[in-house]
Image (cartoon, rainbow, N blue to C red; front, side, top):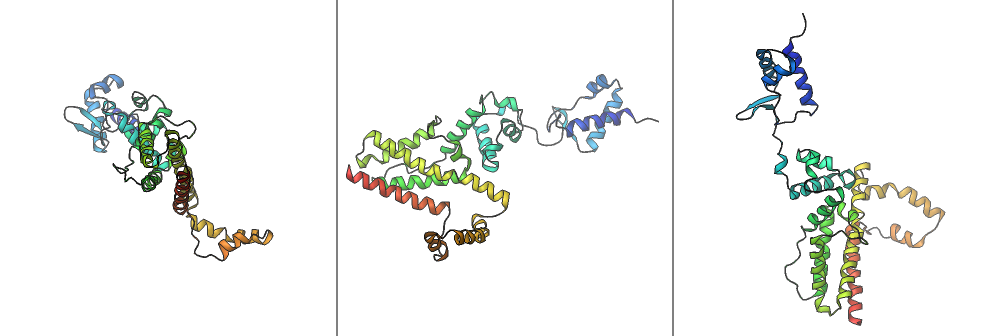
Amino acid sequence: MGEPAYTKIAADLKRRIEAGELRPGERIPSARAITREWGVAIATATKAHAVLRDQGLTVARPGVGTVVAGPAPRRDTDLSLDRIVAAAIAVADEHGMAELSMRRVAASLNVATMSLYRHVPSREELEVAMIDGALGELRVAPRYTGDWRADLEQCGRVMWALFQRHPWLGVTMSLTRPQLSRNAMRLGEWIMGALGPAGLSAPDRMLVQVLLFSFVRGLADAIQPEAEAMRDTGLTGDEWMEQQEPAFHRLLADQPSPAYEELFLRTPDFDFDLDVLFEFGLARFLDGIGVWISSV
């Protein structure tokens, strides 16, 4: 005696559910549709529905019909550019820019990939929107203190914190061909405004704000590669350096380097990481700008 028709139908629908052809919240073929597709009686179709329901694969939803169990996917009409950008930023924050794709963003939103293109036409435009969205998180003081150095120092720290929250941001932004972003312009305007008390010309204020941003962004280029190295090796920067000590000592034996010997062998409290480099570099940058301003 062969397998009953209703179990074959249930098995086929189960396969389609597990393959993602039928997603959570989507209707499965009605009993009448099954009778037409499979050429069976309505009672057989009803039994197939019962098998899927007993297996927890489907549920009856009033006013909708029998649907795949699980949270209903958002309708494409629920999409907005803000939702897409927020989802893309979340993907890039967790996995890096290399893993970002329109398909992956769509999957995180539980919508069809093509539905994204109605709001953002290309990957390049999505990246610009992500940059603008991330820079929109910057919260600088609403008023200047009148001390250009204090204002720029505060702004530099805020930018550094932003790049640390979004490691992909530094490697995505271009210095020579900057992406057009309202929030990037807002940031530049704030920095140039903070330089007002210094009495600099507009071109000079522009150059200072570009250099400040470039300094922070330049250090931020190392954030994502370092995070990836930690994931790949399971080692922190300090642990990795400790593993290099034997090779370092062999190198010193072959090539004496008094400066490095003094630094690493006779200065045990020397600490080096990106935060230390940022603090040192920001202070020296502002020192240099201060000397230059006093001379013009």
